[in-house]
Length: 73
Image (cartoon, rainbow, N blue to C red):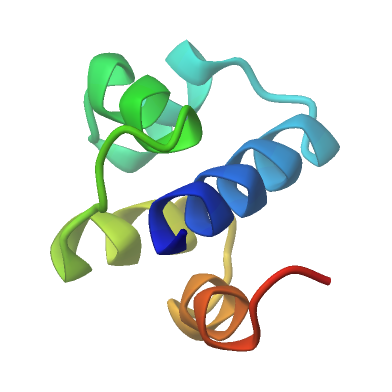
């Protein structure tokens, strides 16, 4: 469940920022394969990866963690 929530939040944020997976990969230094796997809910990212992704959007890691804690909106 948490995997899917974080993945949905990541994808929605990426699209809202009009970014491709490749652009986010370059900006965050996280592989495009890993970003794709997170977005599809296939893996839970480590804290380090979540920090890199949050920083790429100029956000706090809390943005993703809160989504997982609250559950579906």
